[in-house]
Length: 529
Image (cartoon, rainbow, N blue to C red; front, side, top):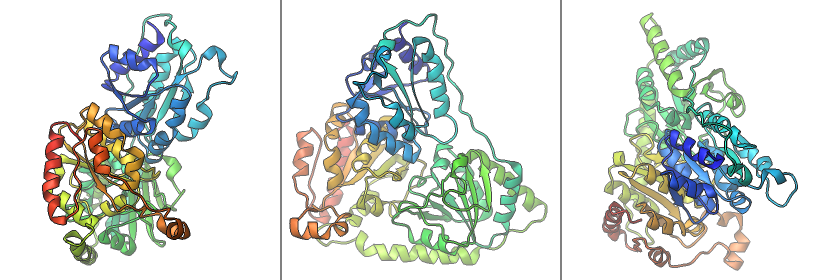
């Protein structure tokens, strides 16, 4: 068995069904011969975004596996892998490589020095017999600790050489660990005694599949829940304890809860403080639970730190809280806190009402979001956004009801990413309606992938919010915009989409939205984007 064939056999043993590929790489043909379906995209970046969405939508139970050409292929892949690394998405990247016998002589790009900064582990397979050892380590990395991409380069001469013996491979298990019992008990005491506790939820709760435990703890503590962009959908936003999500834009209730709380319990989050994370005001008592010790005291100083898997830590906390309540501890009343949060929530609803129902022209984007929400069953829908205004408009307003019903991303904010992510989600869940909201600037960076969706029968729904302007950038280039119109965009995007084979409509009147959305949903049911 040649090394290339061994890679395919291992992927099959790992349950891999799809290979996201861009020619040329002999692994594409070898995988197809072995029964693994290749998905060929039009750009390497979107290909990786598709694999990213596939991994996210399955919580890493199915890993997005990628192969690209040596040299220009892996060079073009950098942005997509950086996006996945920033948000902590597990991907297995298997680029081709130059001949091992000529390594170090120059002439071909060596990806390892660059990609070590945006992967959990990057290495080169030096000989056929190292294939099973290194792939097992790769999958172990993908199934333990903070998720992230792993890259293994397979040199073309190594790929063609036989293993010295039979393939011996056993898939590694998922490895998860709980927190130190002492800080867990201390955290339980703090949370029971707090007057205004808030649970701050990050992406790790979704990867850990811990929504049930999160809900149980929130109800036990009677504590409101705020999520990050990536953590949105980890807690049902129809629940009375949901305060919503926050990033560059933030739900009214979430902003109030974080501002007025006395204790913040961060679970499955890094507490990264930037434009795309809910701010943690100073003066709060902070409990930080993460599976990555590198997160601790990096962004926010923690009064208590717990390192462990989100689901296990939540279960430990539930048991610790029950034990304390049974032994006579009394939970503080949170009625006044909840009343204030509810007032903030109602203010947010009132403030958005006019926009959600606006009949003005041009069409208000919040009216579009509202119309789409009325047209779908959120439990059977997966929605994502693109960079910029669509993300900020969608985040606090879309009501998420089930885990991974909303795929939020944004620690790296590359335009056009959302289209690939939603295509990957649709491949993972063909039974669900998969929707992407994007602006015209983002559409220009990724629109060609509609041809991929048509060819592969990936029936996604793209809502293009077209205002013919770089809405989020004008303030940063006022002279360029006013004098040279540098912020202006143009084009018939409906014609572009139709030309690529997609169902496409241009809607100019608010009253026409409902009908157009219904027709678009019907088209996706037949596998047409």
